[in-house]
Image: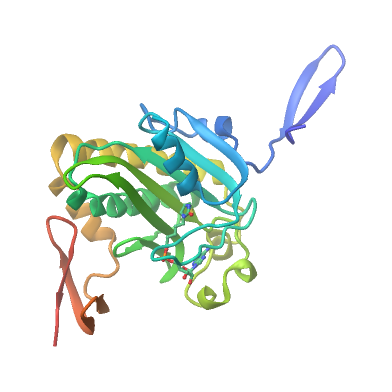
Length: 266
Ligand code: BT5
């Protein structure tokens, strides 16, 4: 019923012929090497947004490391109210709950750290060299394959919980991407021509996410900066700075110790 094909031969035994292409928790678990991240995984066929499901779980006291995954999202969200296309069975739409002891000021570091985990996970699961477009996109060959949406539940001085939303176009056909993103975005499958094992991809990303997060909490963010710099494609490029008071062109020079982008205007 779950889509596993099992062959039976009388008096000889059973053979697992094939597994379904589903993000079942036990399939993700096979690729996890973690202490707490992904130890509880809430699986859904369809949700509105996995981030909203995770926020609900935060309110009911879900432990750190709880993960929500869905095959499809009908109200997938990007930043600033933008929508995120999340076709059924084709991507990795996931949210992870973390409860770091940090101030809200430090929360943006979580997006950078997550992007780095996605870069490493993509490398392990597909062999592709992905790069970070500061602060929350992951690119392959200059095109967006993944986006990160970090949201928090916080008071002025303390963070109660952070929800790390990760969306990856694993096997999303290019035609299924929104029209406004078709030239700037792609999927891992479109680049490699091979079907991506989504459970493995997510398992490896979550493993790196925990490793980097624990390193940040125990030894500080400084130790992660060199790796972030190495994987950030934005450095050295012309960028458009969009601020409340206006927009301007600049050159991206470096990452500051807190993860901010240092730019130079004309
Ligand atoms: C992001 O926003 O890149 C963050 C995306 C986060 C998605 C995950 S999925 C699991 C979790 N649950 C959620 O509801 N969200 C998170 P932003 O930088 O604002 O990019 C949004 C823009 O990317 C849109 O305006 C489109 O132009 C484009 N876009 C939409 N769907 C896309 C897709 N599947 N692939 C690439 N680009 C897309």
